[in-house]
Figure 1 (tube, rainbow over the protein chains, first blue to last red):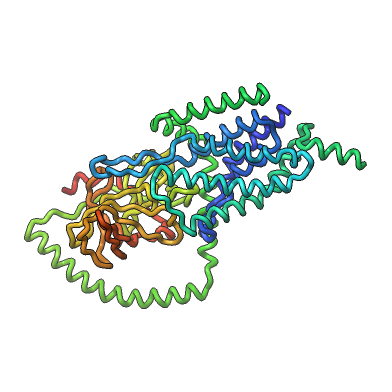
Figure 2: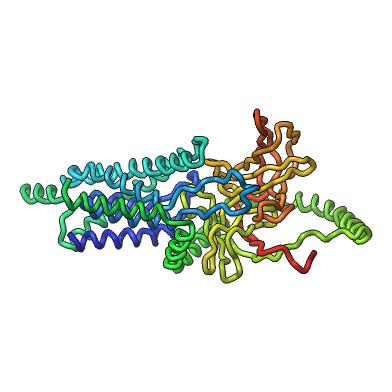
Length: 194
Length: 271
């Protein structure tokens, strides 16, 4: 269990490296594959709450370090109405919220129905992006939602969701190497049938 | 709730409070550590993206290229005529400048750089360039292309820097409209990023009489951008009760950024 949890943390860190190689699809409204979020969401459904929260903290913290923009700069007398930035650390809360959502269907996952979790990872990514965009609108004022933004969120969720079976396959493989069962009920059922 | 879960939740919330209370400087330090550890991977990632882009450029449809060549030939003919006129005007201008003892146009000390990565984040309009602190680049420096203002430096690192583009809402520029007393703040629009999005020039007077095609330049106020850098041309004007706003087509093609120039300072040797 400890070995598996430790490897999921390493996997999350590795996803940050791979994320650097994944460019935005300019032809699909600048959508992208959010591998970091996907690895976190898939891992979240396979671990307990304390590990999930640790993963959420690490993931959110590093994601903010990757994304947060610096202060505006310039003379305040000229740029009197500066555009607000979202605070460093907000992603940790969003990661945790999405993690709790994924853990909500952990019983189904434990029965071996990982397909629901794969689908929910797409939904969670969409909710994550929507929440992020809503926060940006909230801190900057004037709610603006263009068609291209919605399409960007939809395509990003879809593209990311398509990769979830691969991440689950990787997690199952890691679990078997660590001699740890991430869906014990499905294992028992299979043994009974055999 | 199990005691272990409760302890984990409390520790998590403590961590969140800790991150929320970091100052801008502390956040920059955290980002410096993060990007320093990511630097080797970023370099290979950027190289891959550049190669992929080159490959896509090369495999563009041949007919498209033929049409482009034909148009370019026509444009070349036109430009040759314009150039011969321009040369005459330039000579005349030079003579007048000397005669009237005008100050020479402002010259900048610039560092050339290549765009190596586009849009590394979801919501912000940013690019990475292959020049950093080692070439004297610092934060909030203006970035230009041959066509006008591209943006400003957001975060310089060793060997690379992040540039926030003019099309981003957070990149605000004090701007003036040529041939009018109108001065405002130009920035990108939220949620507009596809192709070459229009910019919004805010805080113009209610009586702003602008027309399509008027050029927009930097004022030089605000301590970030040098004056008289071309930003774009007025597309339309929206009059409001308290102020007016203009939509501005940027002079730079943000979908096709290659070489850019970071302005280190105005050349002190050229008054």
